[in-house]
Amino acid sequence: MNIREATTQDFEDIWPIFHEIVSAGETYAYDPQTTREDAFNIWMTQPHKTFVIEEADIVLGTYYLKRNQPGLGGHVCNCGYMVSAEARGRGLATSMCEHSQKMAIELGYRAMQFNLVVATNRGAIRLWEKLGFEIAGRLPKAFMHSSEGLVDAVIMYKWLAVL
Ligand SMILES: CC(C)(COP(=O)(O)OP(=O)(O)OC[C@H]1O[C@@H](n2cnc3c(N)ncnc32)[C@H](O)[C@@H]1OP(=O)(O)O)[C@@H](O)C(=O)NCCC(=O)NCCS
Image (cartoon, rainbow, N blue to C red; front, side, top):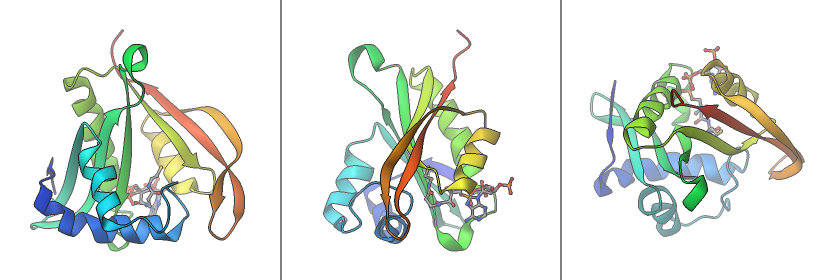
């Protein structure tokens, strides 16, 4: 398993993963109809950095890292993780999240925040808690789930720096 920075060419492999997850409308707030072009902008252009996780040269997951707020909130970063459906439950997101925390420190960030973890995404919440993130707050009915309608979302936060 290898984690490396994504190239423009990697978007060929990232797009099917992004599209499957986003079009399901269960875990990310991006418009389920997001086009490939908009997805490229969201996942490859806007972030500070984007990474892929691969096994035998096959991309199985991806994450982005970006600044969560400008200026005085700029020491807090935000990440988003996606793993292809066939590769879940094998520790890929765990590896990517651990990698992203090291990368965040290297890039000068001091904390990491997840802004909208859908409350029905219990596996993800359990995973982030296991990796040291705490639920900082609950947003009632903040997410329009494709099959469950309005559901809560949580903000998760981890201080990464020593001080
Ligand atoms: C959430 C997600 C990134 C987890 O990736 P993963 O590579 O399966 O996670 P890992 O293998 O590192 O960790 C598995 C843990 O996550 C949880 N988990 C979440 N979704 C899971 C799934 N579909 N299958 C198996 N485990 C899952 C389990 O609780 C498991 O914990 P355990 O080891 O204590 O049993 C992945 O399911 C995914 O891409 N989901 C769709 C997009 C998404 O929800 N992204 C996160 C938004 S906050």
